[in-house]
Image 1: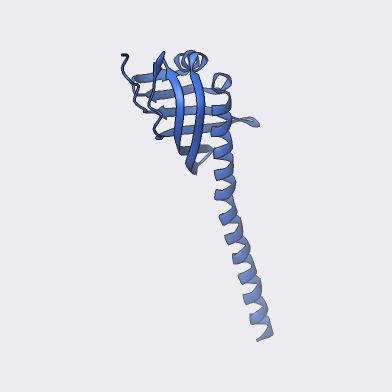
Image 2: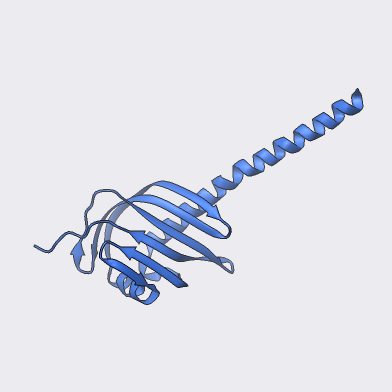
Length: 143
């Protein structure tokens, strides 16, 4: 009886440890995903874009060079990031979030209403690079 009880206690402890580790991984990924997005918004022109980078915006798709050109001329004012959702697939971190921002893209203002965006990050050595980004906020027509 004592032996069975001991085995049960060990098994329960192992299951509890496994559950704790599983529960902590998403929190770690969530914190990392939010940190990567906040870093991107803090310095968009300095973003590390992966070699195979692609983006899509309301006005079309861009490769890495076109996105770098866009980010260099981006005029980003005050912004608020919220509603982060982070998932991990293999080595990728997929992050969706809402942004309310004062910004100009291609010299045109965009809506300041919160809109959702998607960013995908891939590890490169000890760092992370942006592999894909979707920003479908409507560009307001010139007046």
